[in-house]
Image (cartoon, rainbow, N blue to C red; front, side, top):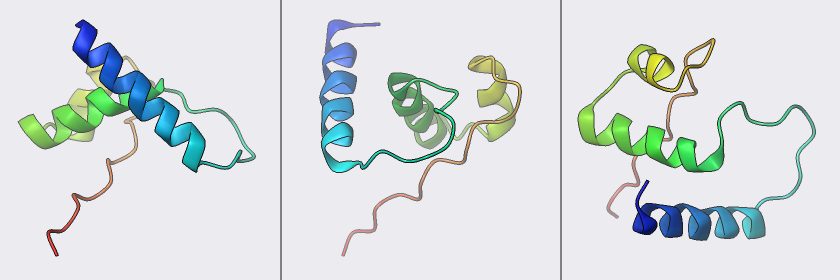
Length: 72
């Protein structure tokens, strides 16, 4: 990964940690940086859950990324 990508994901992760309250249950199967990459691949390349599951070597397809923000 590039230095810029690492910087972006670490900044997003810090913001995510500040805004999130601890939740009960198991931890996510995919690291936060991979979740960011997964979302970018989904929106940029239009990949569906099955190819993303293969790329990220997960037993089940990853969750569907959130819908894009609407321009209001």
